[in-house]
Length: 166
Image (cartoon, rainbow, N blue to C red):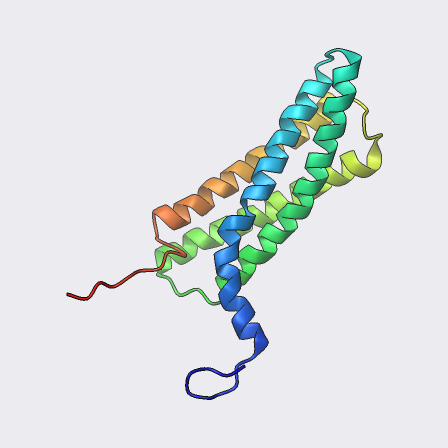
């Protein structure tokens, strides 16, 4: 690959410039999957009819495990987006808090997914302790998403400006 003046560009340069646009798209998958998992597993633990409890537990487990995988992609795309970001000090501090929150959230979600995915049968009812941990991870995920939204809507992070000619 070469740029406009004929100098060779590294493939990593192109990938880094592509990834910032992917982060807002990717982050919605873990949000949807993990919130759905939290509701399904909570309902499964509330002792509804046995048939529904098993189905809810299986759906919740699958959503949680897929959501944990999606969290890794969201974290990776977010970190890649920050590499080449040029923003002011206030935005940089907000992004720093968002990144720290994202790392903590990823660890919580991954631990919950391993606990549920590897520690119990797919259709077993979750314990109330697990449900509390899952809701803590879900809350952390929602707070992280809110912080990311604040980065965009308050500081304009990742928003391209378009100049209009007179």
